[in-house]
Image (cartoon, rainbow, N blue to C red; front, side, top):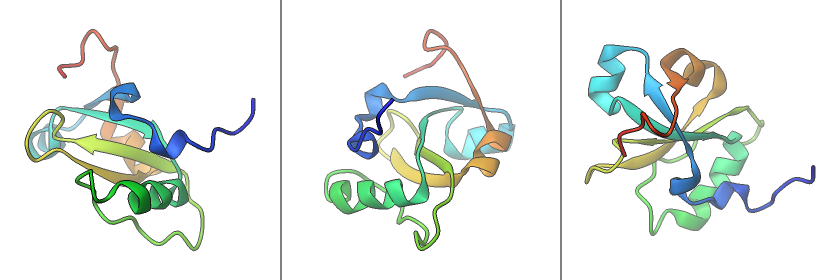
Length: 104
C-alpha cells in the first residue's frame, strides 16, 4: 500500500475512538478521545497547516521521528483540542472502543 501524503490532514470525524483506562486521565481530558497513529513529524505538518483553524498543542521537536498518536481530547466540548503523544504513553493511557460505544 502506498503512503498517503494527506493522512496528517484527515478530518477528526474519521479518527478512531479510544477510552481512558485511568479514571484521573478520563476526568482531566475526557473519558473518550479520538486518535490515529501519526508520527511527531506528521503532526508538525498538521500543526503548520491547521493551527489557525484548529485548537492544537504545539508539537514536540521533530528533529528525530518518533511513533505516536494524534489525539483529540475533550471531544465535543468547547475546550476540545488536538495534541500529539508518543506511542508508548498513548497505549498506557487508552484502549480502543467500538464506535457504537463512543459518546461523540
